[in-house]
Each structure stands twice: as C-alpha cells, then as structure tokens.
Amino acid sequence: MGLEHPVRIDPYPAIAGDAPKARPPSSRKFSWAWIGVVPFFLFAILFLLLPAASIVVRSFEKLGGGVTLDNLRAVVTQRDFVNAYRVSLTISLITSLGGAVFGFLLAYAVCLGGLPRGLRSFLVTFSGVASNFAGVPLAFAFIATMGNAGLVTRIIEGLFNIDIHAHGFTIYNMYGLSIVYMYFQFPLMVLIMAPALDGLRREWREACENLGGTGFHYWRHVAFPILLPTLLGTMILLFGNAFGAYATAYAFSGSFINLVTIVIGAQIQGDVLYNPGLGNALALGMIIIMALCMVGYVAMQRRAARWVR
Amino acid sequence: MKETRRASVWAWLWFILGMLYFFIPLVATFEFSLRMLKGRYTFEAYRVAFTDPRFLQSFGYSLLWATLTIIFSMLLVVPTAYWVHLRLPKVRPWVEFVTLMPFVVPAVVLIFGLIRLYGHPPLVLTSTPILLIVGYTVLSLPYMFRSVDSGLRAIDVRTLTEAAQSLGAGWPTILGQVIFPNLRVGILSGVFLTFAIVMGEFTFAALLSWPAFGPYIEEIGSMRAYTPQAVSVLSFAVTWLSIGLIQWVGRGSGAQTQVAGTR
Image: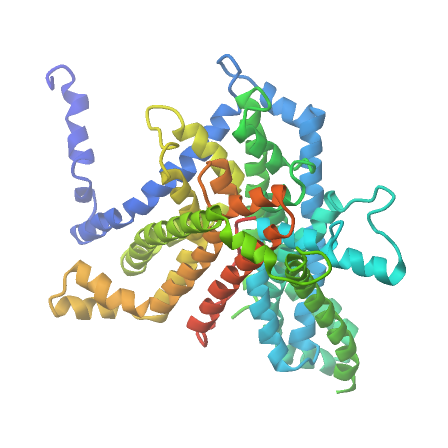
C-alpha cells in the first residue's frame, strides 16, 4: 500500500499518530490533559451543537428533499410567522424595558435611597426566588390574581364597582402576559443592578461635588455613563429571557397568544405546519435572535467590567 | 443629609410597589386555593389535590428526574471544572461558553432539535428518558458551573491536589475526599437550584411526553378550578425551600446573581 503513494502516505502517521512530538517535551503532559474535558465537550457536541446544527441545515431542506430558501422566505413573509415574531419581540421589548426601569428604581431605593439596611438583603433574597419563579405555577398565580374570579379583579369590583373583564376586555393577551413576565423580569434587574450600584464609589460623587457639580450633574455625567453598559446588558438579558419563554405563556393562555415558542411547540407536538422545514426555519430565527442578544450582552459586560476593580 | 431624606419617600414608594408586585400574586393564589367551597375558606382543594393518585405519582417522577439530573450534571461539571482549574485554564472560556448555551438556545428550540435528531435511526433516544435528563442537564449547566467555579476559586486547588498526591492519594481519593468536601457549599447551591428548576419544569417534560409535576399542574389547570392553585402553592413552597436552603447554605459566601433559563 505504501508503495503506491510513498511520498504522500509516509509523513502522515508521524504527525497524526504522535502529535506531542511536534511540541517540546515539556508540553507532552499538557497535551494529555485534554482528555479530562472530553466528556464535557462530547456532551456539548452531541446535545447542543448537533441539534443546533441540524436545525440550521434542515431550515434549507425542501419538503420532498433538496435545498431551498423557501422556508426562510416563508418565515419573513408569511403573515402568521411574521405575526408570531412580532408578538414575541414586542412582549420581550415591553418586559425588558419595564423590568429594567422598575428593577432599577427598586435597586436604587434599597441601595442608595436611605432605606434600612435589612430591606436590601430581604429584597435581594426575594428577587433570587422570584427571578427563578416562572412557568406553570406563575401563570396560575396570575390567573388567581387578575383572572375572571381573581383577587384583584374582585377587589376592584368591590371598591369601584367596575368589572375589568366586562366590555370584552381580556388579560389573556400580549399585555396581560407582559404583566406576568414582569414578575421574573424585574427581580433579575434588581439582582444585577444592586451590586453595580454598590460599586459606585463615594469618591466619584465627592469629586463631582468638589468641581461644583450638582446631583443632576453627577447622575448625568458620572453615575449614569458608568452604569449604562450594565443597564443595557441586563436589558438585553431580559429581552432574551422573555423571548425564549414558553411554559408561562402556554399555561397562561393556551395557544391564544401566538408566540414563536408556542408555534414551535405546536409543531413539535404534531406537524401543524405540514412542513418540517418551516419549523426548523422558525427555530433558526430564534437561535439567531438569541445569539445576537448574547453577543450584545457579552460586549456590554466587557464595557461594564472596566469600572469594577 | 437633607437630600437623602427627600429621596427616602420615593425609595419607600418603589420598595412598597415592588413588595406589592411580589406578594399580591402569592396571596391571591393562596386565597384562591381556599375558595373551593362556596362562601367559606377551607383546605378542601388541598384535600382533593392530595387524594389524586396522579399527584403523588407525577411528583415522584419529578423527584426521580431531578435526582438523575443532579447526579449526571455533577458528574459532568465537577470534574471538568476542577480539571480546567488545575490544568487547562486556557479551555475555561470554552467551557463557560457551553454553560451559557441554554440562554442562546431556548428550551423549546433545543427540544425541537433533539427530537428531530434523535427521534430517527441510527440513534433513537426518544423512547428513553435520556433526552429529558440531557435537556435538564443543559438547563442546569449555568448554575452548576457557576456555583462549582466560584467554589473552586475560593480554594487553592493546586496545593490541595499536590498535598494529596504527595501523601499517595489517587485521583478518586483526591476528588472524593479532598476537593469535593471543600466544594460542598458551591455544589449544594447548584444542586438546590437545579432541583428547584427541574421540579417545576414544564417545557421539556410536556414536549417529550414524560410524566412530571409541571405538566400535571398544567393538565389539572385545564380541567378544574381551585386545585391547580392549591398545587401551585405547593410548587411555590418547593421553590422557596430550595432557594431558602441555598441562601442558608451559602450564607456569608457572597454567592448570588443566578440567572434562570426555564420559562
């Protein structure tokens, strides 16, 4: 065998079979150390990379076989899909903005607002729980709160004699769902903002005051610019957090609210789109948007880290 | 001084609003769960919930999934994190990248990919709970890795390992009797968080059609009133207990900021 291509075959075993030789002897051990992380990366490849890759590849698959761009085109043109993305993105935007503003004000209140110290640790503990508190039970909690027979609904009816569910008004829409999502969104903001606010040094404020700056100047020119990357980064995180949500929305409204995740879920349970390629293309869109969020988040975190020493 | 006092009114306002947002849904759920019998508050809904054999059954299944996930996730993360700290600091960003993947790939999308990939030959895994455990493990990666990683940072891994080695310990002894006990706090907080997430998880179990507590709550929610809220209250209790245990175990260690992935 070796005689047919003597020049080509010979050098290969030397490189492939005995790689450490290519490096100085001291790094021989280092090279073997890689084996220790093989299980982890094997897991990642099998159950994260391959599924993601298969979604990408199959997005371009034609129904009968072959390659096509039709699926992706359908996702950006067909009304149902565009609508699903619009609703998902709107909810994510509303709850990330709302969560960021409310969470920031809360974090500010307990960190710098002069509230008793104990309230801060109380709020942080609570936020730790609430930010992990999502899914079916959360949906039911809000049905019990503002549903047809919910506590708040009855209190409003009792106090003002107004039935908020009259006149065709419903909480089982985009805005109602946004209120539910806020429950896990703003605590996340509190958790990230509180340490950032603690990181604002007294010296910065004093320096600003010594230069004749007012409180407004301090916030406008010192504190806000320093906090901005953290704020934006967290907002991106909240955005992605809401965008990928499924269980809460499903339990809250069934499939009334046409989120992208709900459509994909329906596609999994039964091929409702009658075209597997379309489901893949929908999922691919989600991956792309989430990946963009992640890139933005990492970039913001890098900037934020500049001031944290 | 004057300014702090003035700001304090606003601070109280926001704080109280926040507390209302936190507590009203909890109170409402509890109140709702007591209203099964007309005109008075009873624990009837809880009695009904508990007497449903499927309640305990699905709860038991979730316990099983949670246990399997915790074991698998620990076996995957602890040795890897340790090894990365000891020998391969250069690989760290890659490991971190993988542990952040649950934030990039939403649960629904991940299941979609997994079912399409492992639902057909050559490798059919959809008939076994493997995909479920795998999915939960992926969800647990950020918490597990972060908890273990911060635990590893707090101890001198290299010195401990070398000390154990010079006393003649093999790898199982080093990991099991030296490193593991030192990471107890970190690992435990990862374990409780994973437990809290898996116990209430809906998406994976429902879409992979395995019995679990999350889908059970959703199912009775579409059939009955009041009992779903009673079961939800119990589910809150599980979450609270887990997170409370994390706070208690990790008190003083400054561990915090967990970012969740299951929605």
